Image (cartoon, rainbow over all chains, first blue to last red; front, side, top):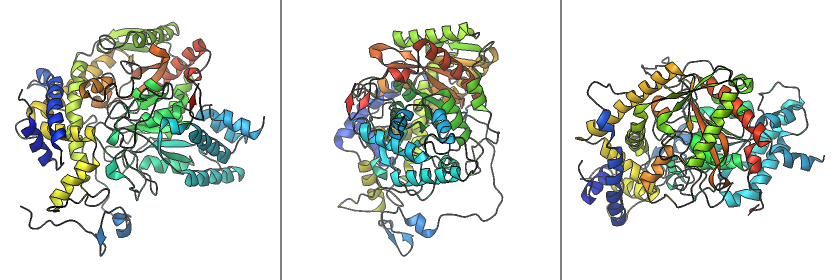
Length: 98
Length: 508
């Protein structure tokens, strides 16, 4: 099993969009190896002949009638927003990012 | 008996008894609701079971129920009985934080389906209960708002993630509460606080309006002081919901009748060999064995069964759960609701997301999101997430084979009694072991109940868990109700009567 080092944790944090401190990065790196060791046993029994189950109850598409129903009002939808302007969510700059 | 004496006594009775007193006109819902707020004021400063109290609205509901009852209106059987709701369930107009700083101050614009059912039935909602952040934990220590303490010993954890709901019910702050169970978060707190906790069949109670951690595992359910109360609440919140695509269309069974049947003659109970040996404390096992002896004397048949793949369930869970959590929690990005942290340099959307999530999430949430991101990443997906989903198949096969032989399965609910605050907080793998007995049911979608089995080490409560096939929740109430009656006969009353008294913050 590959070891999970600080650089790996930093890369995962970047993928997950979570800013970590140096201390957090170091601590998680130490913990992840022991956690992944503990879960490694799953591959022992997960042989090719065993099908995967993604959900406890067998699922098929569940579709409702295509009729208009009541939804949140614009005001309700924006009520918890950190910032809003002209009836829309105001978000930080998106264009111009690398 | 004066009204004040009557109401201070009645909060210690079951929800069913409180409902009967309301129906008989011996107490009003307003008196009952005020009595519970009085109890909260007296003891919650020590316990921290509630994150938010809903006093004005609860009393309005109570007065409305009283008026409707006085007018002769036919009401739901639990109308007027107060309830507490875990803070991961959204409540229109009332704060909902999921125990996280990232949602501090957020007021949902809608009700969860189960909350709508509670309101429709006329249950005053006392407030929102403390929990591990986003329901991630086994001790309620990962709440951003401080830990909840166990009513039996305030230096101990009340279990998790629903420690607030369990502590509220166990300390007579609320007769009923709602919990959610992703890997045992209703049953394990029930076991360590001497209360009853039920995880219904997956899909039988709507998840609409539950802030999701792991969508294929999460299930809301009752937290109560008696098996009958759980059945009454379970019947109220269960049923098909078109807002939840995983909601089962099945009619709700008569669970209350099952709880009251007191009959286990001929019931075959399977003891899961993999869930009673190594790692389970001797006194927890002793209470488990005594409970089985009681049931056997009452006519049940005890059978040993083996579920060999349960050994792998914990590992599979700790791959599936963080994987789903990493996806579900992506919406907490500081854009549309909740906390937004703007970094000083380069405040682009991506940097705002990183700063917001870095500041808004606690350690356990970060740890699980990163683990999930790892388990789902290219190159590791098949080895981790794919393998875990195969173990899920094997666990389901174990359940199917066991239920060929027996009607229900049994194990201790939690391997130990409540541990001390801080004891396992720095050791995630040790913390995760608390859920070893409860997790298989979440992987397979089967229902489970935890019932107090007696006092173990240090005079602290232990629980026994029963598991039934999916959609056969009534069997849990049959065996749980019967065992509760047998044990209470032997104890001379409910286990909670043995708990140290909590008054004005002073224990004993």
